[in-house]
Length: 291
Image (cartoon, rainbow, N blue to C red; front, side, top):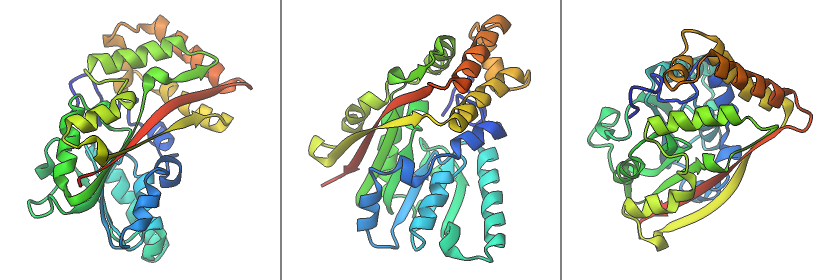
């Protein structure tokens, strides 16, 4: 899925513990508000695949909200999946196996969405009621093919749901211009599209759905509380300060030398500490269901 420039996980922002904690702020309620009403309308034993599940905060939350559903989280990173399995085991032990707490029908697999047989048995393909992806299409160069594969994984009449950000719309205040240039350079080098969000309907059409089969909406992702801005900033600062981090190595390959990295760290510290700071990104959402 990722080219040589990305980290082992395919995450442009790395996969160190600080970054995974940052990503773990995501929940089904904050990120899948557009999809939850549809999920509530399904039989309670529905089957869902969470594509690019990352540290699984959304996956675990879905399993808690829908304890009778069968939920599989898949991610390209074996390290992240191993972490998720460890967290699940720990929570099950703490709750004495009470399924309603984290979902006893939740499991995790390593795999590539462009190759479903890498994580699904042949008889599982085409059986999912819902295939959901949250802010992962933007990291896949061939996002249309990813949607086609998601469509093949869903059952006939099943749902493919996607939410993604439009990084071209991202606003950070106080401005972090050099940080923005680094992020855009990383996506460009990887041949991934920072404008994936605004193109989401177009991508779904190219993947084979008709326009009447696509329900579209939009929302705004915000990073406003100081604690949230601190986690966001410290994740990148930590990566740039670690000489062994993939993110720092990638930055150097792209021409962001020590001086430019210091500018980025200074910008992010100012953003983190500012009383008037915030980060805003437009996100778009589609629910695709063949008629």
